[in-house]
Image 1 (cartoon, helix red, strand yellow):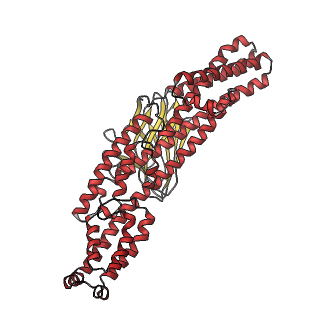
Image 2 (cartoon, rainbow, N blue to C red):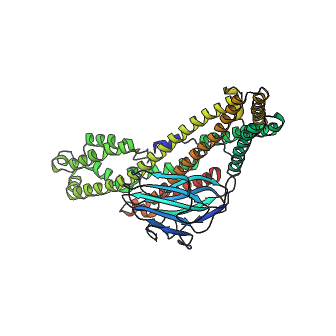
Image 3 (tube, rainbow, N blue to C red):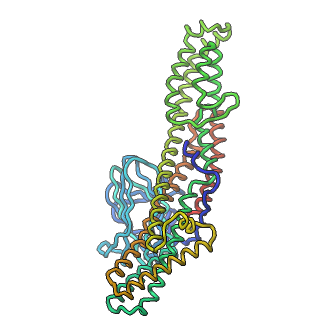
Amino acid sequence: MRYALMLCCAMLALPVSAKPVSTVFSSDFEQAGLSQWRLLGDCQLTSELPRNGQGAVRCANGNNSLFSREALSEQGLLELWIMPESDLVSYRIQVLLSDRSTLDSAWQPVAVIEHQAGSSGYKAHRISIDDPGRKFLRLDIESQQGYVQLDDLQIERILLGTALHKNEQRIISGILDTLRRDQNFALQAESFRTLGTNYAAQLDVQRQYLEYANALHSGISLVLASSERNKMSNPMAYASFRAIINDTKRVSSQIQQARLNSMIKPFGDLVTATLNVVSAGTYSAFAEPFKSFLATSFDRSSYQNAGLSRSDRKFAEDNGLKIYQDAERFLSELERELQLVSQLDNELAVIQRAIEDYRKDLEKHLRETLLHASIVSSKENISKVLSKDENVRQKLIAAAAGNISLKAGTYLNDGNNTELIRFVLKTSELLDGMQRYKDGFNQITSGMLTYYERFERSVAPEQNPFTLKADRDAWENHARKARDYLKQSKDSFNKAYL
């Protein structure tokens, strides 16, 4: 995977470890089955292709709904794994909440999960519901061109940062309500101070998410796992291919041997067994010309005129067809492996671009946040926000909080209610804007979880594509190392970001 080289081996910035979270609802469709749900439509338990364990729930093509039988104490982060029947299937899942669990209740839409046709396999989805009330959960599932399977659904408790954001919204509403009733500064001063403090606290939240974005791909374990995965798609890693090369050289002239060495050079050194990254382009440029070269090398007119010994000519005559058939079989097995590696490569590239876009967009939002607080968005001040020195950060945060409070108070003292309302609404807009970045980060972590899942499945023992024992053993040797490195990387990812 060429993008594995982009994953820096040292952390660019160390993220703040994620706080422990508690699960308020979990449904893996195992022991409890569907007892936690009421159904509308054609959804049923299945033991075919669960993500984990022995069970999942399969919902037929069309419209179906799941209703939680019990009201949930609160809804925070919803994580759900979904698998379409094939890459032709698209689906749309609407998440709704209500005080009552009946079809005619006032169900409030809170989130939508969408997937376009084009990929298959289990995909992670993570969305913030963020409702502190005791509500029933409903999932409206619409799929086209086939069924979808759901597994491993869980909802975590609302995070403290989200609860603070809800409080910010109440503070802003209170300020605007009080302005309509009474313009006395004394009545507003405390609200302005609280607003400034909460607004400035968002700077630290932005810092944390920027650190996440900078460090998300930087684990050395993932680099090592990718390295082992690359070796598994390199023909030089397998004894049968090396034997084919040696047999072909035995019946080739010197100029043919030079041509053969040139063909296999992109894969590494046959003697030292150094293995290079194999791309789909490298393979496609090699496979068919190599088979043509083999056919020519073992053609009677070729080896009879290659200046070979009698025993080598006899070897070519007796084994040429079998060697060609072995090569064709091996290259077919290898192509399947390369397809899996290429898919993972492409998926990692998409995640890499998403992280870069996310980081640039969040940096822009950070500059806007500083400017609104009357702080110049210079490189120096950006560095202070991102500083490892907490005292440096706190001084700038305190300045931002004071500026917000002072500016609001100045508008009120001057009797400029129009500008005050505009200022408060802009403050609210910037506070609310962070929710978009939290949701964006959920999408990135969903992509990473899906990537880990597909990587893990691609190196499972049952995925071994080879026929000969020596090749199967070589594949498994690299796969075992890849699985170990991948587990280390996934555990670190879960601890740091989830």
